[in-house]
Amino acid sequence: MIVLCDVAGVMVDFDDEISFRILQEAGVHRAGAMQMYKQEFEDFSRGRLSDNEYVRLLNDRHFNKVVDIATIQRAHDEHFTRRNDNVVGIIQSIPRERVAIITDTNAWQHRRIAGFIDLVALSNNVFESHEMGMIKTDPGSFPHVIRSLGVPAADIVLIDDLRKNVDRARGFGMKAVLYQSTEQLRGELARIGMSLP
Image 1 (cartoon, helix red, strand yellow):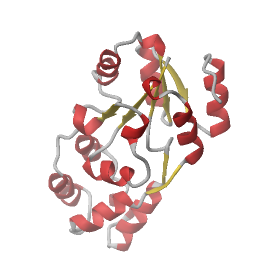
Image 2 (cartoon, rainbow, N blue to C red):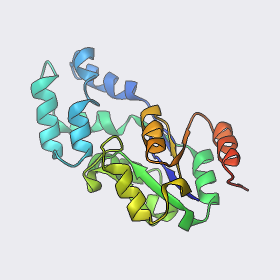
Image 3 (tube, rainbow, N blue to C red):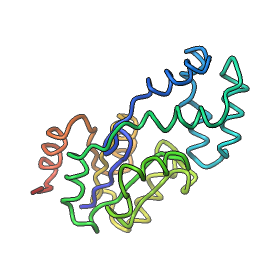
């Protein structure tokens, strides 16, 4: 069994409200600030937009005033709050060859997450959306991961904090756990036959 673990919301905590507050302090209306993680962000996370293009689109489409790239990047980066040592400990207890990482990410997030955790130290199989050109909800994302891992889908268990990703993984024949807490995660992994120390 290979554990395919998400990063943000599972191994690293985040709070979107921090981003919205920083943007509002910069003069952006709340409704505009709340657009930060919508369609443009998905394209940024697919690697289809540069950071400058992402910022330009936010300013042009959603913000009531022009916000500089440094402020937008700070709003993005500071919403990642801390490493979840309990979950990271579980992942570290699994033999490295049985761990893979999947994350909807971008160049900013890649750098910020590296400040909390070295993903490559956990696994040789790290699937970052901005490098794959796909986020988890894209049709080719999970098939790409399954092929790359070289095991049947039924031998992969996704740990993710979003129901849509869990449902999608199950639709491709993978096992999946909707992460809610460390205790719940341990119980779910035990139920599917994974023994943890």
